Image (cartoon, rainbow, N blue to C red; front, side, top):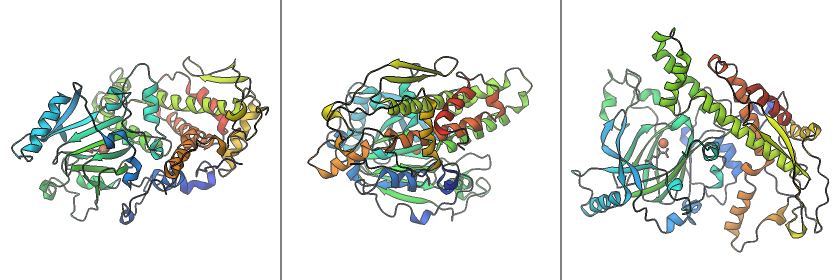
Length: 499
Ligand SMILES: O=C(O)CCC(=O)C(=O)O
Ligand SMILES: [Fe+2]
């Protein structure tokens, strides 16, 4: 029986209406947003991909999505961990003053605050951006929903030996704590799940935030503040500026698209889990943001343009202000591309005698084949045959093999059965609970693990690399591995005319 195939709206030049590249002048129909909760068991990844990731529209999932999480059932004793806490009563550079606190002390503070009925006189402290998964890797408080699983940021930062950062956070704070008006780091997406408590979210569509800038171009700290009515200071503000509000209930999960500014208020004592993430659908938004940030840095220090090392200085400031510079962004893209090329090679060499490994840690892109025997055997064979799988699969040292991937590009709705060899429904775990089983199934079929998604990812990375090499600032940076050899290697998978 053929594997259920998922098609993504990618790749062909004809399908430009579904291309994630078209970000300029996007119009959002805000009247339709949040009208209903998405039920995770009725929504497919493919639908979410088309309607929300590619369209960059917010949405909210019902609490069914989190009902099995350990954190939703019993949370949690963090003990002596040191956690970052924001004082919501004190502004500092359009954000809140932050300090470190021992988690136990934060809980004591919180308990007193609750038992005293949240007195106004008391400090209003919000534990934010706690890297909980990193601090408690064995706890498994939750699992990332499949809809948000194409997450290049955490994939890259997890793979780095030189950094132990990640973009997975826990927030907890009493009623009244809040997060000022902002858009997320690098214009990434975020998803946020309420473990307990309720939040009010206020969203402003991309571009509309300019109405909330003062005459110096700085964003207002509190979107509900009366200072917006001061026309001299906020010349672009009008009361009719469109805002979207939604109340997120316990267990519900909200998707925050790229570049949508938002402000968040905890209406009750609330705990939430959130990730920042990025993938081929918002890559261009993130890259455009980085270019724009660099232009601003250049403008700000334009009076020293003639000094030696000016470009390097601009990159340093970019890294400090945005968290990433061009060369790190390049490393990030190469890591994702390398992972996808390795994945595609593995798919082709499964059950064959040789595995081709691409590595990019030297100054060039290397292709090595190594002996590696992997047979389909008996009941673990996913080919639908009971005997060992004796399909002969050619290896991907042979470039002709890679042409089969290029064919996928030409017709995005091509069947992948030729490529996803040795896989069918027999591989799915048996399960008594149909709902959970369906979810597992979707997870197994997730785009992140499919040939199709890997090709989609590669094409998006290639387009960005092609754009990067056109920028003067990037040309001044030594790339290691060389950017052209990376692009050549990618062309073996997606064709040199892949847009
Ligand atoms: O929950 C909050 O206070 C802020 C969350 C947020 O800004 C986000 O998830 O992007
Ligand atoms: Fe945010």
